[in-house]
Amino acid sequence: TQKTQELEIPKPEEQKQDFCAPKGLVGALAIDFDMDKLEERLQELSENNKDFFENGEHTPENCQVQKLKNIAIIIPFRDMTKDLFRTKQLLYFLYYMVPILHRQNNHFSIYLVNQVHDDLPFNRAKLLNIGFEIAKKDGFDCFFFHDVDLVPESDQNIYECFDNPRHYSGYIDKYNYNLPYNTIFGGITAYSAEAFDKINGYSNEYWGWGGEDDDLERRTIAGAKYKLLRPEAGKSHYKMIKHSHETSNKPNPNRQKLLKAWNNHAKFDGLNSLNYELIERSNDLFFKNITVNLKYSE
Ligand code: UD2
Ligand code: MN
Image (cartoon, rainbow, N blue to C red):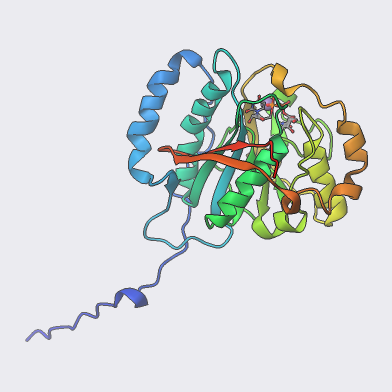
């Protein structure tokens, strides 16, 4: 005689959920920015990924997202070029980054923070502060401040945060994968909400090209005593889309003076003095679109 075994079916709340882990990483990736192929590639991007997105964000299914793996990629943006070159960079960025982040299997969203066309110079740092403030309110706990023209050459370059901030883009093809100087902090940096709050974010006072990245390095290392950390050199190679500098983003003539005095303004110039006007907020399929006016008067 056969004994019927009673099957024990666990109730949903008792089901143990594992933490999300990367799925199907492929390692090194061939990256090119062939503009003639852009259109077909965008079609490919949307066909293969549209089902994984809701409201411009991706949430992994059937696993539990760990702390510091709710990732907001914040991109400072303005395109005043005639040929829409920054927009094309953005499309290429999405084409490569979306599948990579999807395979890394974390909760993520890309925030495009647009400076409205105005007569002001570009202000990368202030746009990044705004993106942080908004994405933090949306519930993210890990923030990547990310230039639009950098793409990782391997999906083993894992996007995640730790308590100590990290500079991600130390090894770029443009610089033969060497650090141009030891304390370089431009391109891409990753912060927990706590760490970015602790340093009071970026300075809002850098208008035009340059200096804001070094100022952030001073706040983080000399100011808050974090270690200068980067992901493993061999695993964090980036390709940069070649471009010239916009006339609307001229080198800031005050940048050296501001940088020298970083410690005099860090405490009251940053997240705690941030003001701006939110012009528009909308969700694209693969990113969240924020448009702001940096000119502010009360
Ligand atoms: C370096 C840094 C960058 C920043 C900049 C000085 C690296 C790898 N990069 O980049 O992080 O510190 O120097 O400010 O160290 N952008 C627009 N529209 C514009 C101008 C800029 O969208 O009109 C955005 C875009 O996301 C771009 C980023 O700002 O990638 C930085 O500007 P860039 O690429 O012209 O500066 P670059 O390459 O000299
Ligand atoms: Mn660049």
